[in-house]
Length: 451
Image (cartoon, rainbow, N blue to C red; front, side, top):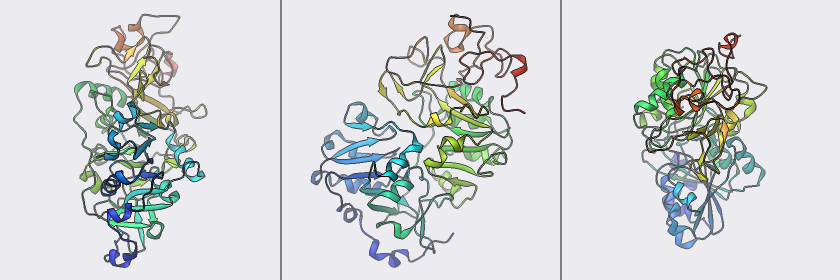
């Protein structure tokens, strides 16, 4: 890959400043903002400067990092947020009723855009400089950005030499963009805080369920007080062989795992040898690592989150976090007591299908929270969103045969203490994935996907 050296001169008729580019914004329009650390900060700032001259501009976004000045409640008459995922920089606005959240599976978002049900007037994205063939790369954010780019009436792109060139479905012809805004600023970074001891215990228990040759999905979001536990799981996989990834997001934690030799993708049913992702959020170290690295394949959500695509993997392991679970095995991961924290989103596509029993869902939760109560409860908070899965707590999840109502300690280790707490996962008498407390017989104690 070789960038066009004099691209600004070659495409001079397309170049504008952020203010000039956003002068096209009109009241009542719908604006899409690029995802995650790829959010175009200069364009966002220029759009916000138009707050006094526009009204009722709808902001469409997935996950955004960095500042979101348009989410200020003082600008609620100018900008109205409509999010497909509730990220931290807009969570208070959504919960206080100054913005909207649209519950939808990530794989279905492009259908809204392609069909015209949700037309986009302006897309604000960030790309690499064009190469000698006149192609740019969407870099670290492909997800729904590609569909928004293809469907928006006006596409305004920050062209940043610091954006890594990525492989997969990332390339766009420069003439499919309308306005180019040259910038030279570091890509937004996201640091991962060191995990606490409880998080590491949970991650270790989950890692014990992941066999050699598995294809892994690592979920989004965080458990308050415990961090992004799915990312911690990778710390305990260095002794595995032929691990593959088919996941929405990757972060810096994947680099040591690759360098240990554990990640080859050689056993993946599709996209063999590739780390398949939709976007990434991390530090410059990660961005430099994925730059022009053919091992990474960034694909849009209509592919990566499609149930039929996921179901083709024979050893799919989906690792997600949980905010609360009850004694029947119901899992809450997106909202709590009616308050939307992340949104009801993508994990459903990574839950086992009846046609594909070789998949394994895995949800994480701390057994005892830092401040009273407990995520392992006899019932969930009212109005809490629910889904199900396999929940490895601080100790391996164990159960006895359920014949009617049993004491809590016999079902979930987080709810008490029982004699079976130290049994390893898969040992006869422990719970099976999605089994709701069902016991594994000695004949079924091996992993379900073994021949």
